[in-house]
Length: 302
View 1: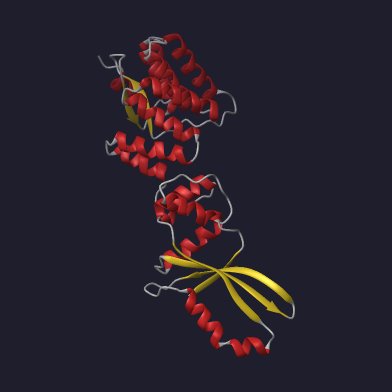
View 2: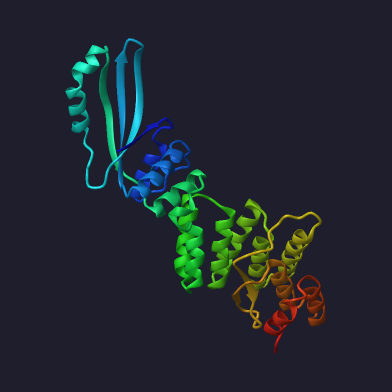
């Protein structure tokens, strides 16, 4: 049996309980670090439950109250009565040292699953160790890669219900634009841009504007995104798992992998008739000389 002292409170345990009731807990902090440590130890020892026990002691040094967390051995359920029996059997020893012990609270609970732990970590702002598997965001991207766009969107919607995130909102906007719900995608892309600026977010905003007929606004959005990305000293991210590229029909978009954000912006501006084929080639060759010709063949072929 592993025992550790609990000092941070019960917020994380209460948040886990709320999740299991099908509700979304509010943001919290206390107790999450200790929950992660308990989950790590229990994972190694294949334990599934713990018991949080509050003890009150009286001794010559005074009265004290403290809480301990006991990790249950697999197949050996812990009960409050067992703790009481131990104290009863050691009553004379304790009394001889003028010590009395009482249990004022006993809570046995099931440790979180990896999915629950990741959700709690995101809500509380704690990073979850990699041993607990991919994050919800990583799982959503993997789901998208398998062609299940709606399953991917479902995950992003749940993530946003748990906690607001510009990155997650942009990802939802990406999926909405791709599936034809362009107006909703535009609103979410705008919120993402306002929340935490990234050129990728503004490119998605501009693509939605273009699909809705707001061509001038779309070009301005894409040009600004490119300018921000290329600004001296910029640390903005040019990498993305997938980017949107306007279809030659101008009525829809496709998702493309392994295409940097700035390259996607330039290609989309060309698809918006903002540049010539020669200007696009010059720009791509300048920044991506090794890949420019293959991209030109893919995106500008008749």
